Amino acid sequence: MRMFKKKKRVAAANTTTPEGPEVQPWEMGPAVEITAMGAADDTQNQANLIQARQSMGIVSAKEIVAEAISKLADRVLLDYTRETVTVRMDIDGVWHPLNPLDRQSGDMLLAVLKKLCNLNIQERRARQKGEFGVKYLGDKYLCKLTSQGTQTGERVILIVEAVKGAKISKLEEAGMREKLLEKYKEIVNHSKKGMVLISAPPSRGGLTTTWVAALGSVDRFVRDMVTIEPINDQQPEVENIGVRTFDPADGENPAKLIPKILLKQPDTILVPEIADTETADLLTNIVDDHDMRVFTSVRAKDCAEAVLRFLMLKPNPEKYSQNLSVVLNTRLVRKLCDSCKQSYPPPPELLQRLGIPPGRVSSLCRQFQFQPTEGQKEEAPPICQECGGIGYRGRTAICELMVIDDKLRRAIVKQPKLEVLRQLSRQAKNRTLQEEGILLVAQGITSLNELQRVMKG
Ligand SMILES: [Zn+2]
Image (cartoon, rainbow, N blue to C red; front, side, top):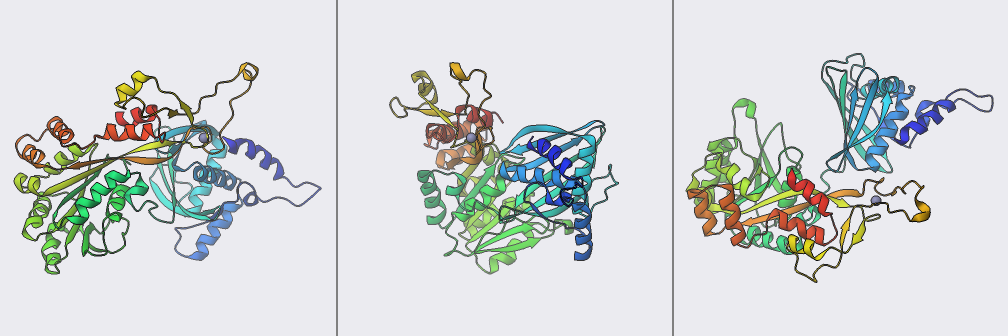
């Protein structure tokens, strides 16, 4: 990792030399501006920052944050053992190991991170959570720190989030192709009533982003839309959608609020997450009884699974199947780095296997592979400045849309099985997730290897 080489240089610069004044630790490393947070008042935060700035750990902290931001990493994981600290970064959903730190440098780094969050530096066992602010290259970020003792030492997770809020606000920005988007908008904007089911895989599968983007692509300005969310777990705000909250700790659920909300006659009700049969049942009923649209979401790996996940909440199956109009599912996939991706002519049998008609695609793209000429054999492979040699940069979503027809409706009631739903969906001319992914490969947006990797998950 870059930070090591730099560290040696800056360590030498820290000593007072006859030529000039001493360089303070906080003046070294990348130009990351840090704000301490978490203390009771600004004075204490400022005192914490001053103390942190005097430790050499501040240089590693700045370097780690700058590296995470420039590589678009979502999380940094530090694992402390007796001798060393392993460092990994989650970049576009894949863990990349970096060079380990020696234990002493790792401890200085952690003491600084905890100080910036107003946490207890001496506490190495109990779980601690805090945050601090960062400004780098003109943008603001919030760094969320969690530390927890483990059998071998301590585990630290640092999440670096841009402060601008959800960056993706429409389905086309999430990666949905134009024709599919038209189909989605046709269904949700032109029909007065119906149920829309939004889904993405569990565990960091991008459900929140998909939810925000799916609503962002709905015509919200001619409709009266209300979302019902738990008070302790609210979704990012979407413009022109009213918010009502309930407190699950008080035994409340969305079903308890819906009758009151209906008095104001909104035309769309949204419940991002449903945990009880009462709400699931009521939501499927009000589509008919009040001629309205409802949106909800579940965690699932494809549209067929999403249909069954909602069914597991045990709504009335007839009402549910009658009123379900469309299911959206997304799967995140890494995009090939535009600066270093390589194109290659695909063998005809590969195109055939992928179901791409002959003559449609003359080249596919893959991750950079160094192929040295005779004279370059001894040379180290060049490192791409854009992606740092990873070959991928950023992610997009493979979007699957299942428009529910009468055959699917009957199957939801009579044969609610994954394979049956998938087969009927294909018959109804809905493209599968895999087929949608191949379209991205054919356009050179991602590679076949990457598609295979994410489809396995
Ligand atoms: Zn690259």
